[in-house]
Length: 183
Ligand SMILES: [Mg+2]
Image 1 (cartoon, rainbow, N blue to C red):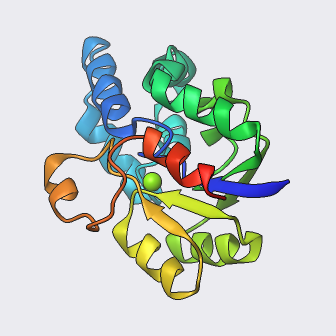
Image 2: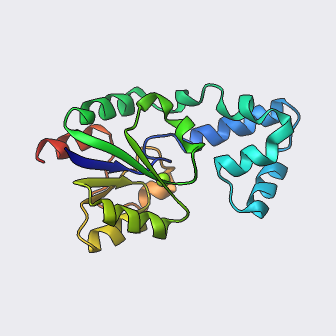
Image 3: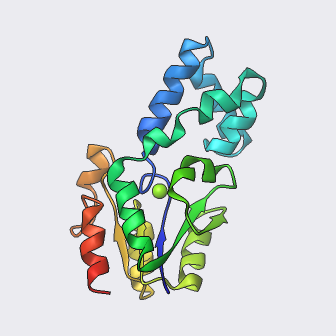
């Protein structure tokens, strides 16, 4: 079976909406989100695992993980289910195992966790999938230069990022099914 590969944040998971909700939850519990995010940045980066560590005693698990699958719309669930009939679906994401929680319900067949976009590009080249989808224009451009069929997904991006997107950026998960049809 051929491999179809995806980035996780802002491609399969609505990371921006999730971060807004996390901020609201902290405020409701009397935790200053800016302080938490600043601390996370000092510790490395503002990702799920670092925020989890920083929150620790403030009930990180319930605050960060409850209802987390609500941030995957039906269009993404349907897309992955459909693709699995034809492809081995893998995810390449910056982060660690905790990232899996975000998309538990998609039952992804294999994950590759990397430390940076540069490492992500190297791993994708190694996997050599029939296509790869990422939300970052630069990642897509670099992979295309190396002959990988890469696409930029913009459905979860804010308007200012959408404006800076590639001309052939994908605006709906359904467009991937059209691409997959011809493979
Ligand atoms: Mg991403």
